[in-house]
Image (cartoon, rainbow, N blue to C red; front, side):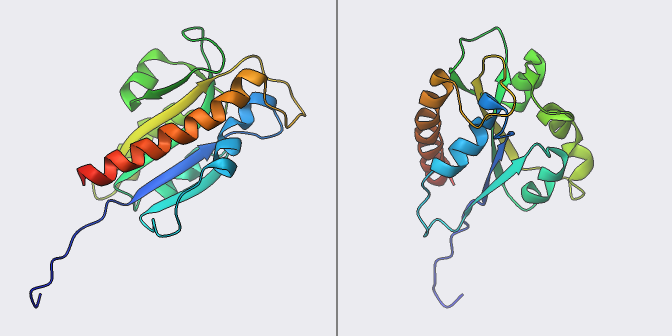
Length: 165
């Protein structure tokens, strides 16, 4: 190519889930609003998916790596704890997802949805929640504090993914 060095950039999609009018279930939306991605990072797409997990595939299918951000209820961690999950660990531990079809169903359908057999790498970043409070757009104090932590964890992971590409 005329002596030019061509590098392949890793295409990453960040998908944020939740209902911002059900208290702590709005965690994904809060992270979506607060996360700062430099405009020159054209290889990173951000999408707020609301509660529509199965439609999220349309944002994932052209990516090499996806980070899914959501709230979940589990008794394994204290409310406000933010943790990374692999698809396997997320599905194995079966934490209660807060949407009808759920991210676990999306993960199970990826082999069917990826027609070319090239499914993206997937990681999940989740916050543990309290009981949800309907019809409020306010997060509990522990989940509110976790928003900044989640943003920092995502930014750090994006740097790691870029360096590894």
